[in-house]
Image (cartoon, rainbow, N blue to C red; front, side, top):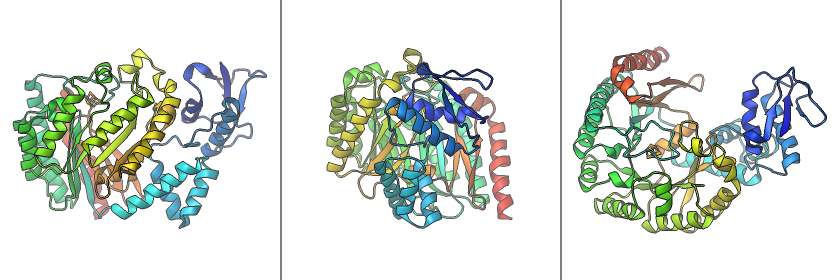
Length: 460
Ligand code: SF4
């Protein structure tokens, strides 16, 4: 067990994220300020710096020397590395300079720094800066047929009567938000119905939900309307017909793995054949923008299994593929089974991602957005790949953080963008769907006070 003592810095929890990139929680102990160190204790920040990056550089150097690891993301533990690269690019006016700072000051590998620059320039080219007063609209459906073992989202398995009550409350929030956005001059640029699994709803419920969105919001400037179909076992002909008739242009069908045994282990109630069937059905209904999510590092999967999943998914020829790395979050069941699972997956996930990147490139998929999460296998990243012109604007904007996201439904977290200060303010709905139904008036008041009144202030 390593003993680590960080001197002269109060917010030690901010630094622990980086320590955990090198060491599992059972491999080290942080000593309190008044605990005596011995000859083996790793002492950080003897100089008393208050610069978090400087202290993180020391941690990186010392733990690198100790473990022989050189994590490719350097000292970065934040979620949005492309945003940082963009800020450096804008500040210095030079891509080379941004890459130099990322490698020398943040210790990123040359490969990751160059990837960030490439993604930033690509996104600027595709999406540019968001139109003034535009927003992404997110609508959450927190229901799924079963709960996946790694799930940390709002995902409930409930009877239809509960879903009806939820939709009634959601309809009120949609109607209110659509009206107030129009009155305050906020224009949706993208709409994203996510979850949970929105296609848990019946065809009739989906139709009514989208109709409610279409009558409540001014969608004249919307570039993209996504419905995350997600679980193949919820995708039926009548639901696809509704989505098509309602003009939905992008859907997601998420295999996660094409190995039957893995799907069983992770608690998905569908087979690989269900995925193929749902995908073919969506094509039959004319969907020409389908995304597929896959996960690297799932329990009991080898690099060959992941490669096989990727090959089968690419054979279906979706327009985009999002490669996630398994994250073991506190709210998931996986954390009870093996809380250190993700620490053990590092080498295997590295191999999966490296092979996947090559295989995806060979089939014409380019990376277009990237983000990181805490507790990810190997501290890697999630990457969205797509065929040229099939990017998801909503995904780009949410990671870029220069546009408001207005989120509706249980667990929805709105982010209000203050252009003058270039910052975001979070406005959260309650996560529990029953509380959401009960407290819907309070949710509307929160939106009024923290979003629409704020927008009005900076407009006047
Ligand atoms: S489909 Fe997604 S939201 Fe639903 S249980 Fe699985 S991980 Fe959670």
